Length: 392
Image 1 (spheres, rainbow, N blue to C red):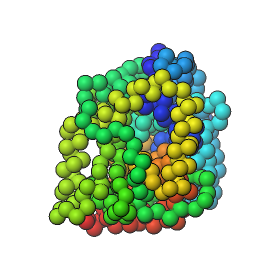
Image 2 (cartoon, rainbow, N blue to C red):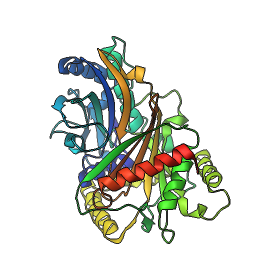
Image 3 (cartoon, rainbow, N blue to C red):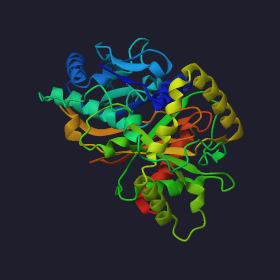
Image 4 (tube, rainbow, N blue to C red):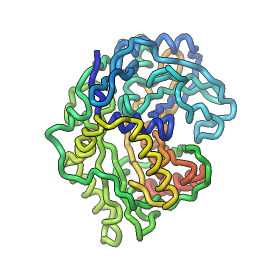
């Protein structure tokens, strides 16, 4: 079984070289007596049902394909006695790449004050929604149920994008400002998490507006919003990388009478016009660009952006949606919360992720240390949480 590697996926392969690990990380927080052996068996059974988790690269350039290697998904345990699940303090393993030769997915069993099951996937092979799908399959096996089957092959993101879109701006804008962040000289990534008791209605426009207000009005403010291409094929079950994005012009809403309504209208129009497909279609030619070239250019662009304070985008804002904790419990493990670490990059000032559950809205963000310190990030999340709770 195999499928072509799309242009977007090659772009994310380069991103993983520039700022590793560049992974989606679904973290299930809970309690129970689950052993490493039980988890390992469940992971391998789930991987049989969802073989994209065992994908490996084969071929070169536009002939490159993902193939099912048949190799087991790595599962390992680690002790994190000082970690509270709220930031990168105490859990450096979550900012490390998988061990060499481990493939593009792995599962971690972390033990500390609580127990955490971490399902990790490189963004080139899976998106956030697909990673959640794999996590749900693992816990289905632990409950003694049959895991949901997700075929390995096509469609790719380009297949789902063909015939749609072709309306919006696709290229990065080199003069976007970061959203008022205070950086350090650290060549590292930071991430933090905040739980917000807020209604999910209007989350995206409220957060976009809050970021616009923090951005230098003399520079461009643009927010990239990932959109799941599966919405065009509701019957499709796949955990491949099937995400496009729309690009929202934040600075165009400054000074309007009702900026929240204006932003909501823009987001709605861009989704209605299928503009998430534009990003995917524009990247098709990257299938023929060597990943090493993209890595070299990406490193240079990121360094210049950090030095100048002007980036290709202000932030990426992704909403994974609501996740049922019952679907992430089993085998003696009871989930109490679920959150994600977004894939950060040196040239991306802020990647903000949202996931809903019975504990409220989990808001997670990843930033490059050269742009934003951990303390500045935590202050930003506090401010954004207030924006969701109080409204504009």
